[in-house]
Image 1 (cartoon, rainbow, N blue to C red):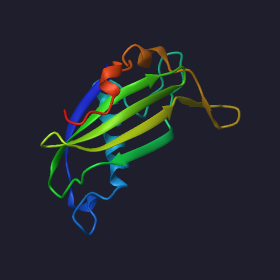
Image 2: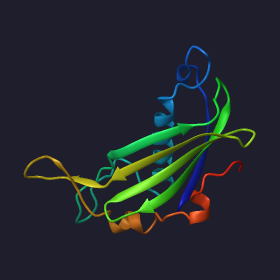
Image 3: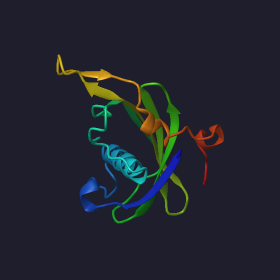
Length: 151
C-alpha cells in the first residue's frame, strides 16, 4: 500500500488563542495517521517480536511541516499519508492535511528509520526493514507526490 487516509476533527485543546490549530499539533496528527496506516496493514508501530526476529522500532530522523491554510476548532479535515520512498533502512512519508473544501491546509514530511536494540550495548541500531513490512509498503507513484493546488 502506498496511500492511506483518515478523517480527524480539530479539538479545542489543539487550538491556540486565535482558535486555530497550533503548529505543533500537526506533528501529533502526522504521528496518528502513521499509526493508523500501520494498523491498516495489520501491524502496530510497537512491533511485537516475530518468529526468528527481534522487534523493530521506527524513530523519526526527520520531521517537517509547511502550512498553507488554518484549521479551526471543530473543523473536520482529511489526513492523507503517501509513502514517498522505501529505502533499505528508512521509510519517508508525505502527509497532507485537506480542509473540507479540498483546500490543502498543510503538508508534512516524516523520515522514520527501522532500528533494533543491540543486546550487547542496549543502543538502537539501524537495520534493514524486515520483509513483512516491505511486502505491504510501497512508494506512491511520482505523480501523486507532487504538491497539488487542489484535490
